[in-house]
Image (cartoon, rainbow, N blue to C red; front, side, top):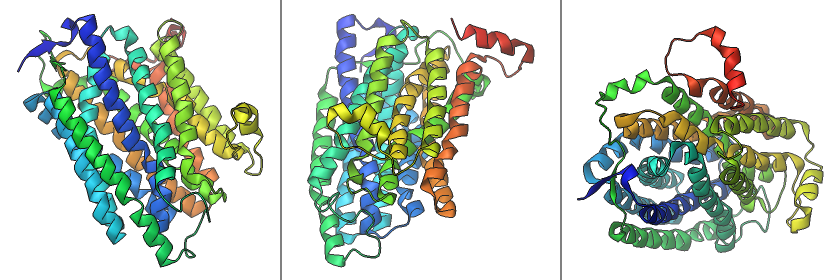
Length: 448
């Protein structure tokens, strides 16, 4: 097996590798953001409460915590290309498990299927993110990840629309049918999941075979003269704090994408299944902006700081606007012909714009200078994706206790505060010893 140093790839090889990785980002974007549409559907089929329905996100993203370090070990043993093909095959198995889950209308079986898909995605994420970070100069890594994000979130726009088109009896009736839907309707809705997930499994297996045969070189992402023990990973505060930041960020991303359908459903919206597309559309816009301005006009740190401020503004908009008003979406989206949505729901979608540049800026900032520890550091960052399991579950508990989903979004304020702190301070730390007198110059350096 030929192993090439990451920096040794030719420009032509880089373009081919980027195209293949782009395909992977599309696939796991499509699969991941189906959850935003699946959650309200399973709430109907299995007669679930809001907090129970959000176990979908908990189990799906918990797989990243359980499987991240094993995924890194797998990739070191069998290589990136074979490992990514294996990840695709595992995802296909998870898609197939949705079929008996649908026939049985068994929520635990759905959760098992989602955990298996999440496990396959963990291998893909652990391989593809450091690959794209190191496939070129460090200062333009955010631009490359932004391009991948456009691909990933474009899939997120399409997934809810495809789901709504393929699943019968969704989005055309009672938006909150718990307790009123009859067994025949629930059975029809459950059976409607079979063909889409069967098709997804077939496609994933085909892609796994194509990926295994693709001209993607094996790359030693840890290639360096520096010899470091794996335990040294904890000596890098910018990495550890980056993982903590990604933990809270992933909670924000999942809140914005996977709870918006439940929020719209709670407000009586009929077309709640397709609402995730609004969030993903704004994320695509944010990634496009990032690809254009980072690092030409904005440094990675400054883009991250602006994301934190914009996120706090979105949370303020969610809490302060009225569900009866549709003014914001009419002003911003009226020219597109899209249906107007309530202002608080629109502000949830705007979180997608705020979130877009967090992932592509934190990764290069956190992996900076890790050398031979790059794959272990990447595994730690992938483990942080478990924030998508924990934070939305807390959101569900708050919404249930307060009987007010709109107020529950205030949970996002401290999460965006952590993103902001990492941009201003945490990403610069190279030692756990903190000199408080250095804090003001850090703010000044943000302009550089």
